[in-house]
Image (cartoon, rainbow, N blue to C red; front, side, top):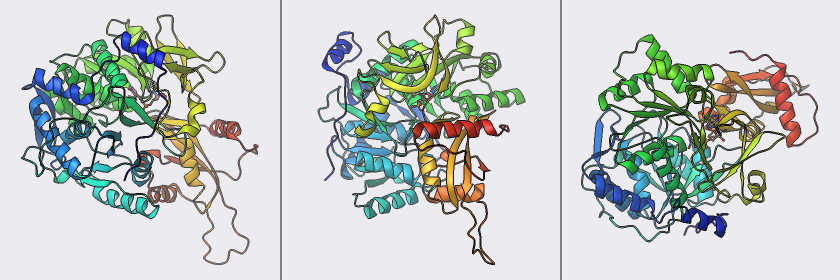
Length: 552
Ligand code: J2J
């Protein structure tokens, strides 16, 4: 049997009452959300994309067909043993089944645990362990990686460590449109809107990831309010180019915002300009969300004359990492649409530039919060932003030991971001004080990579440093002090500096997602001496970063 859902720090009663009275929190749950949209928009197209098993075949589901597929998949998950309140790790590429799987979990009153396609044994194993997942849903091996083999390795590893492995559910062998082998499940068990609906990945600053518990009520508020701000309606066609499980394309306003308004979600199987421009043209896409490096590569392709009709595109959102002002200024003229900057986080707070903001604010700021009840506090000394509000969590899932590092006594989430607030209320993100690298929107916990490097045989000490990168914004540089050559090394001894390729092979063998692995290696004889401790570790990284001029 699985352990019960763990308790989390929630909103104090007086805040909960305030958010309900203000109309932010309603009684709607995700399953009820879908049911109501299916009633209103039954024959409209809800989701377009490729199937998990057929990455080259176009599939389109109406709202009614989506609902039917959700019932079928819920039947399959139930047969795999998933029950109300169980956790289900979802690791799917951008295929139509992704949307089906999210709502199939909700149909059972189960909680999706969102993972990225780039995650590997280490991350999936951690998510499964921390959440004590009942099932792991993935998409076979047709997507450039063998997820079935990954599932086997994760299961073996959990078993070896005394954990019950989750049931493996491979959607590449599931028939999305045909009658399923199991009875369809059409009604959901009773769930409260203030219950935790799912666990989202946190950017991460520690060796072990933290999971973000979001409730139906708080998340759906952010989705509805985002759909209002972005003016979505039935004519909205959104291209999901980023991994669909990322909080940004999921909810800001994301695919959920589009479904809220009866629009169409188009899932791009990969984010390349070639694929995405083609889909924008053929599906008449009006909205998409990008991270800054993708925005740059789209600009470069448009400038090179990759010929496609992008005239349907109204808004390109950019967020996840700081967009350089110079790139921001090119988006509207060169892609022929409006730019919207988005600064958000899985923990809650989301800021948008607004359609009627002056160009200067749109190109130089990261927007202002969704809600007038988003409370912002900027530390006068460090500039760090702390925030609380109707959709910002008060604590992580099952990580009590890190609580005080991330939340203040009065319930503010410490973002670790350094910001400046303009008189208009808009924020500019100017820096970061958390131990994290933001590699073009992908978040890397420095501690996690350093801890693994220290397990490498030939490494005496290691420090992970962020290096400026023209395309990614930041890239990952490992400073390594090799072990001293042993004095008795005779002929054939292999005492020599480790190479980047060897270190990456080691980290791959350790099951670490490729995007977290060093892009670059710098060997040094010794680190400047510092006393042990977190603060000194930060100082060491800063002095290393300053010691060598960054190459582009
Ligand atoms: C600078 N840094 C940014 C921006 C996020 C919408 C949009 C993004 C996310 C997201 C999200 C930034 N400029 N425009 O969840 O709903 C950095 C900050 C922040 C961290 C959160 C959403 N937009 N960031 O990126 O949980 O450091 O969410 O604290 O992945 O990304 O990362 P994540």
